[in-house]
Image 1 (spheres, rainbow over the protein chains, first blue to last red):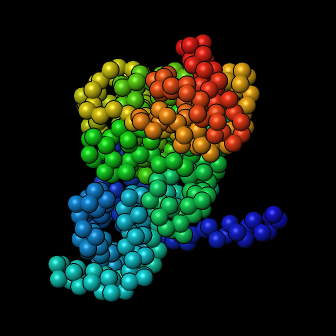
Image 2 (image 1 turned 135 degrees about the vertical axis):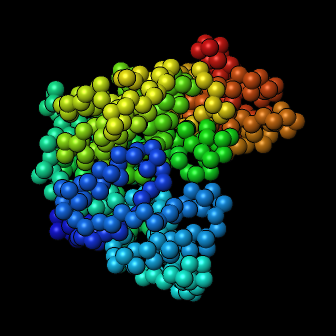
Image 3 (image 1 turned 30 degrees about the vertical axis):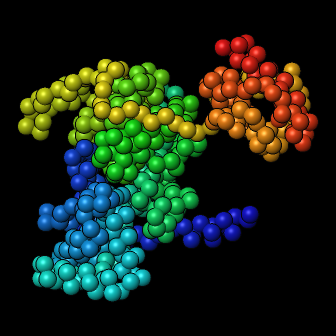
Length: 357
Length: 110
């Protein structure tokens, strides 16, 4: 294939990402498990890139977890989402950024439904009006937060204090990028690179000096899958999916994993502990496990933010080996200190998985 | 090891690179006619043991070729060595000898 042809084909896999003035929709899981990520996102967008973004305390969950667990009906989810659109409209915004891939899937599913079934949109408007008295406009641009970081990756690279390069060897860090299924597997045109070649994380990694590993199970689901982990008896299936990925990536010796989905980040991180406790296995050479980062944490490290302010100590697999490789300084004494200087309760140590306390 | 109230589901992927092919190679070496099997299932259709109990020679053939030999010993002992399968095989495979060689290989690679 000629290069021009390739470029033309690749254009079909791009999506439109707004330049400025965003309304931010937070994630339930990320605020709890990776509390530094969204703070870092806002800091990067406002502080580093000078963009206008509204972090609205009035929005609620998108009901995604309840919806996929068959507890919340579609009409309820639709009305909740319509309320978020109403909040955005009331605040004068037209572009929405969604922090969570599950929410992103919910929003895309609803917007596509409304596109094809206008009567369902009319029903949602009626429900919202009846319940809250609000009205809404459909946003002009809906993006996932990783799309935004992807869009500004080169500006971030220009400001980078550290690159994704192993300082000890000078080689690029080997990165596993994992993209959440609901990002583009459901509606391919909503994701950068579509369902076949999702490029959103790979673009960031390459721009910041790292090397992406193309391992056999790269596009396999992490196993999150809502009902698989919500029902305890099904969790064996959930963890088996992550295990399949770890077994597949292990021979390539990845330095870290980066995900754009809160569920994937959580499970790729925490199932490493579960597998180590159940089978005594870890997936790096030294028994520390493979650190799993969100894309904002990766961007934060590249921009030279303090690892403990990014919340890396809140992960199950600890990131000190990665920080050493990147040459990022950190103070172990500060690791478990709160903003007011108090030390919070130290976590219990796992049996097999090594941690740097 | 800790108990979490669930266990890790076993992977059912057939990994041809990882699986054990010693048994297949031994049978092919000692009964070369086995290589021409087309998995038609004639042997299974005529099998005396298979008509009475849960026993399937074609399934065994597939399992051996995949290298999945864990439950083979229990299965292979169901064969009565009557040899009817040899009479119907369209490729003229000495199926009775194949069974004997599998038994021999199980002993050898145990």
